[in-house]
Image (tube, rainbow, N blue to C red; front, top):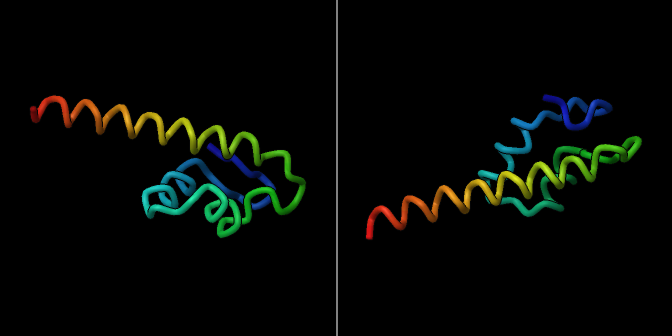
Length: 67
């Protein structure tokens, strides 16, 4: 799904950038999220933070199974 229609940025593009270990600010700057109308910035940040929480929960589950 598109997060930033002005620049054609998708959720998958945000996910890929997060997996590269970039900060939220670096992701927004490199992809150009919010540099046109700016309406998408909050949705993009919400999406990235939601993905971070999901990743942490998955990581915690894997760690607890190893113990």
